[in-house]
Length: 243
Image (tube, rainbow, N blue to C red; front, side, top):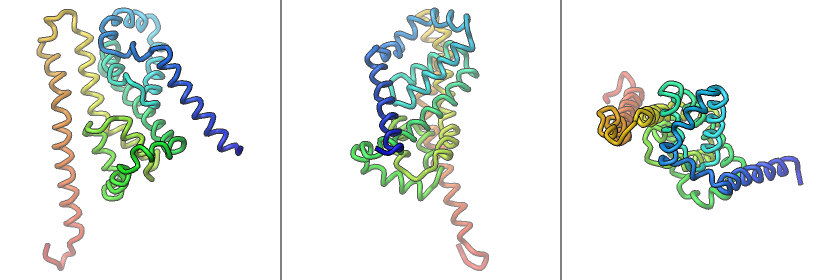
């Protein structure tokens, strides 16, 4: 067995063990909205006692959840907004989710390529065509418009030729607006002290944004594509030719 093969085997075992521990200990039951509401005061007390340590643990957990495509990322985002406020959570979640996504992309590319190809190989051709046609902008649109599951995009991009550096930068920018919407919703959940608070204007607006954002993003992407196409047509027309 070569060192490279041994290294891959070790990583596969490590990933498998992490997933087994996560589900074996029933940790997924803690990453629910009901549990968040029930333990909000306890978590708030723990955060107040050791802010830096608590944030570091939150960051690490978020990276792990995103990297291994485990359930709970949305609840973690809402919980962060409720506990830390908007700007701190936006900063932490933006980097943690992007780092986790990049790790997931790398795992798909270097460890699980064959398994993923068997499951979604037929869809990768379309993704490759999109990358060839629009470059990094194609990934940007996938990130901006949340029509596809987070883990599917990570896995599919791992089977393309897109560099991990480009994947990271584009994902960081493309996921930021959606992250901001969810973090804002989390801050409003943190202010919810009674059932009557559900009908507060700020909370209603926050959750309305969750529904409006995909449509607004789709319109923005369509506009950007039209402008790109128009620019390309102008660039292809020489001064002596009639458009």
